[in-house]
Image 1 (cartoon, rainbow, N blue to C red):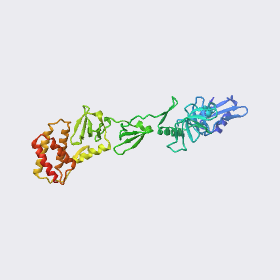
Image 2 (cartoon, rainbow, N blue to C red; image 1 turned 45 degrees about the horizontal axis):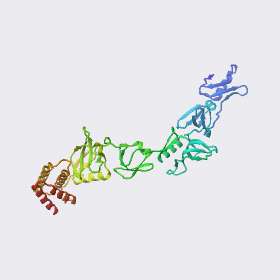
Image 3 (cartoon, rainbow, N blue to C red; image 1 turned 180 degrees about the horizontal axis):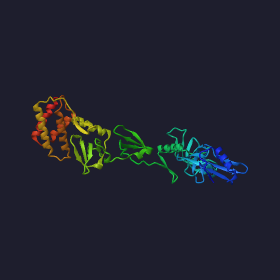
Image 4 (tube, one colour; image 1 turned 120 degrees about the vertical axis):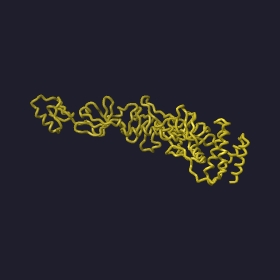
Length: 418
């Protein structure tokens, strides 16, 4: 019989039921909100009392485990192992659940005695428990997790609450382990990446320089020897050209084929660059080339080299506008005749360059000389560096033109006087 009483007090309900005395008295009354009232000739009407108390761990016949957070007049307020909350009637819990004991523990359950959190393996004849691993909350974080199977003598063991489970699994992951609940096996996490790989989270590119017990050691464009824990590796993936953004500095993986300032991928699967360094020569114009799979983010040293050569050639990079800009210089003190000579030499260089293949060392040596000569023109108080003088000397030896060689010799001797 289900009694619809509405939201009344226990006294109201009992009074109402007493008035029904002329009717046949059922043994159990169930109110609309789930409260259960029993009747007997000796005791009359009686509200069902909770069998368990706040703080108890209880388990059902289906091995559902819950912690009693509070008790209302008609409900147990439960917290389940996964942290979810549930309200069940006092009558149902009293009839179908019992207090949890260590005999209810199953292989793979996460248990705790208040200070040690562990994964249960077996109950031994001496009353101790065997674990797969454990976490000691009193130890320092660096050695709190123990990956060894241990026999533990614990005074009061209960299922672990969600917060305790989180502590155990975070400590486990930090130590480089994971637990396979299907196979009931503690496993060492195998690193997903290897030394030399470039990995990215979509924002920062990292080069792996070492793999330790539980972490990767990486270099970025900002800092060397940073760390990424294995349990965070899911946030990263192997870098590919699709991760490159306009303005990124890339380099060929062999370390010798060049460094470039990436602009975009071309329709024919090439790479368009704002500028590049090839054989130590700075190329100040957009060029496209092949080798998508041969490129990776540049190291800090490679980035520094690109921007150094860029500056030496009289350029700077505008990161906001994504463009290469000529550095503004004071007005030149070179005479008109000097400028004519420089223009003439640049023109001769252009003609000489046609005698060489684009990828030859001679081609890029002449390109380097042209950039240097262009750099001369806007300078006011300038003196060539030793590297620039060496480049000029090398160009003199490479020349196939007698007139060109004589002009370079004359220029070389004049520059030595500066």
